[in-house]
Length: 140
Image: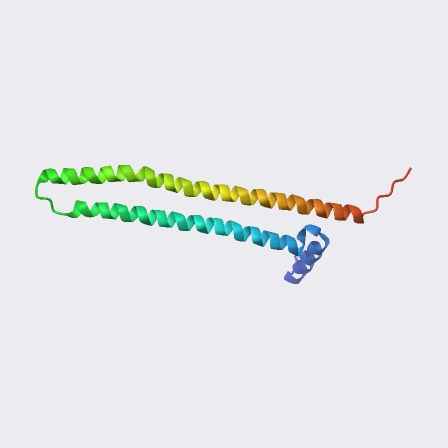
């Protein structure tokens, strides 16, 4: 069984021999994770703001239901008004939620596409460097 020191030593040896484990690669991963986290947090914030707004609208509409009405028929009107308001605001809020999700999805796709392009360029550079260092001999 490996001890922690042996494991660390072997990992250092492995990463020092592999050009893809360079400090620039680690920095790229950290930068990617930072950008991805920012997309997620921005999306969560917008979602929370929209949910809060929707909740406030609903609670304000519910206030009218708690008021005492003079005629019994007034209760049905208040309930009908509440249902109408909810029916009208729900599609609007759901569309806004869909837009938030769509933006997050597009931002994420863009981030992955950019990262893929950068990785491809880095791999090409590394492969060229490695190929230039390698001497190929042919025997006849």
